Length: 187
Image 1 (cartoon, rainbow, N blue to C red):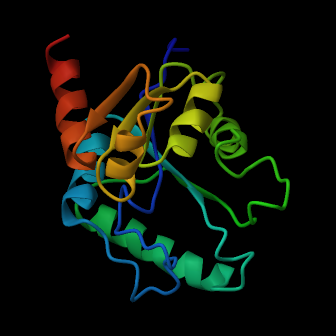
Image 2 (image 1 turned 120 degrees about the vertical axis):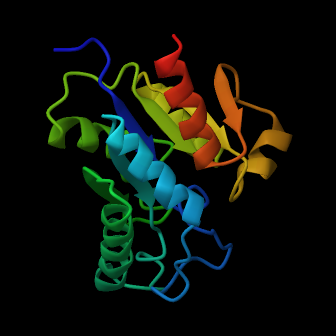
């Protein structure tokens, strides 16, 4: 088994699609960044496994239901497939911040679920890409390398400046994929 799987775990809101402080509550409000869809396709075409780990407390808050979330994820999968890519797995936490679950980032439960479902011994060396500190903390807890995108809430996270040690900071998911594939081609 390879010492470090070619796996990139992505946060969803702010990384793949526009984020909103009022939550993404419907398929109409789920607006993907076109460059992010292409970036996911390029990753998978280059042999990387792509998984998504997303906190979706809007479910616990009653803003939308699992059927609505599934519709958003079906559309994401359709767009990535249409662009020539593949998403191996999408996992989400439906709980609110006060629910005390193990899956809500910054806790690493969602990432452990990805590790288990993809039958990996470890996530060490994989990448966690997010726009918030809690995304990066979840990744670091399981040994992932971390990348912060400035899209979504990323600029705010970067300006806060805490917890970003050993974190690659890039403009958006497309810039991360450009960097990663360049590193792979020119080690």
